Figure (tube, rainbow, N blue to C red):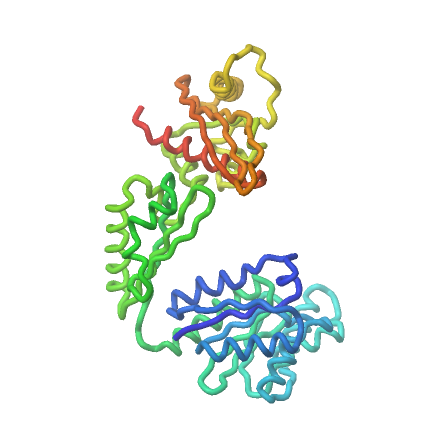
Length: 401
């Protein structure tokens, strides 16, 4: 079966809100497996919603619609879908009672406007909302399966888990199962990765292999399908082994872990503590590390826009070495990280800006410094720089001592 996601809401197409629902739905449907071939976003306009419905249903077997089930006048999804299929809207008594009970638990009376959240097209099956007020619904038309949910991500996720995924597994009914692996690759250009694994990314291949770049990390997703869990796992494992052979030590994780989590795990395993001092990255390194659960066990201190060093230095390399030593010694941490100034050259016509910076990692008095060069928009350079520092920190932690 193939599928599509239709996300509805003016806030999506005006750029005020990122459509994370389509990403979540696609990831979940792939595990059924349903092959998602289309994402569509439209505003709260009946004609545009109907046009999107016609296009999507002309291409796919399964359509998940999110958004437009609220209690306000611009929430038109249920009305448009009912009209599109020539069905009346009816009030579902159980859904209405659940909405009333939800308000009552908060000590409030249900406003009249929320009554419409219990309306569904005649002949559809209700999808109860255990995390909010608006009921979803499921209907079949000429062999097409349409699931309609609220746009609130938390509520959508609940409906996916409670109703949509079990229903789709029942519909697929061929006993196929999916195994999925996420590998993160660091320190190799995307173009070189593509050259090494081009044959493994052929369309229609099983397992399916896709890539997603983010700063200096490339995420490779392996999705294998087979009649049994054991067969799917074996197919995925064979691809992972092939990727290891082709990409080697550039694979930094095989479980989806990103650089901050990898660094945190290495620090915990080695019972080491760390402190950071940043000039050019504005606290981004500290921010990424401290977002990891349990960071308080190994993160000692972070300083941003550190004042000039008391001891004069002649070069930027000397400065970051001194900065890393200061971060370590002044906090009693085992490791100090120093990030120098980010120097950005103005872009020439038709070219992106270039930036460079020095960073140092001081492990118990032994410092390693490195100069990094990068290109991109100014807003992007600091993000990339923070990623590069974490990559260098990981490399230092992996060295035998």
